[in-house]
Length: 280
Length: 204
Image 1 (cartoon, one colour):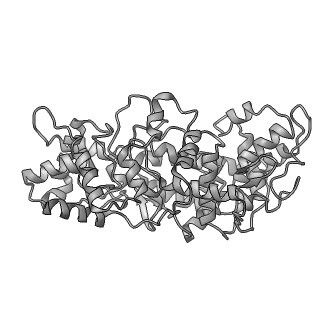
Image 2 (tube, chains in turn orange, yellow; image 1 turned 180 degrees about the horizontal axis):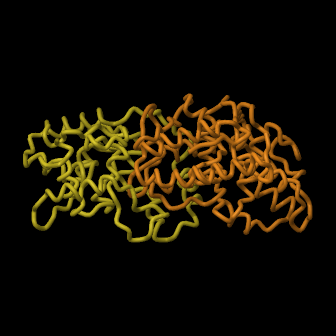
């Protein structure tokens, strides 16, 4: 499931995405309904995984994973994502989890940063500065997440929550999910604790309990966001949610976001990962 | 007393049915995670991270306060209501419609000082011609007509619904737009007009 921008298919696809992106922007200015219709078209067009630009990020991530970097001049191949050094298959499906060497529960992004710092002895300041890609600015983290997560595609989300710190993270994540704050009094639960609700025309998944919607949501992140023309990770999703909640920007790779991710992933226990997916 | 009791009962009934969060971790642990999660937020944004008393109680009671607690919340929120200096509670419904459509303001991606919208359509059906509406709140089509456009309903709309939702329904999901200074009293008057002016498309 790979294609390259050099190939004809790759070039056609990039052109198609650019055109659709421009159409999408003007549609947004017209009405959400028209946008939704246009987006449904992209979803159909791009539902073929061979045509999902998220797989470009997977390819770049693989190259980054194998590249020797940092003061140690080593690749990330000896990085332990929980299944043993260099074992990628199924690792993402069991994250976040407790890591003895670090003494804490980590999500994939925290763990990748930890491996860069401790294994590669890489100064991650620049990597963190580029945590979210923008036009003309690639993100190593987005690419690496796409690559690593893809190695768990087809596997079920499975969080053991055996370690007391994992249980603490779950309980904290749950409390954060229901915690109201900021100038609009919103919590995650304001929008995500009931089935069948919408903001404007956008359907809202109930993520407060083990629902089908929770499985569909957590089983499809990371994802390629057509509206942003970028591969996005769960850290970005939560950052964007807190933006809409009128909260300040949460710290990247903070323990609170990991706790929230533990809670959300547990509501999706057993969901078969199909990542990177493609979304509006 | 009876009125207060009825109000409290209504507030309970209005509270959404949420999954019960189970308190398996001490609140102080949660708060230390929260502080650490926003450790890099600018100083003038930090106050948004800290819960006020109403947010804290509503979170703790899962938005379903018992009647006595609900009455305390509503009394506190009623005390926060500010009325326009000229005493007029109805503004311009056309400006109100624009504010109801506008979802900008107050986000860290917004330019500082930009006026906020009410973003009413995100959650409510209002003017029937607008088909892109959300369903988190009840539909408000015909709101003023259903209330016979009475001055009492105008006052209630201003002070209870728009200025401070929790003066009417303790732990309501709806933002306290006036009390939290998301909207100005002028904007709130325009939104009251959108609901209560007979000429407003909401009532056509």
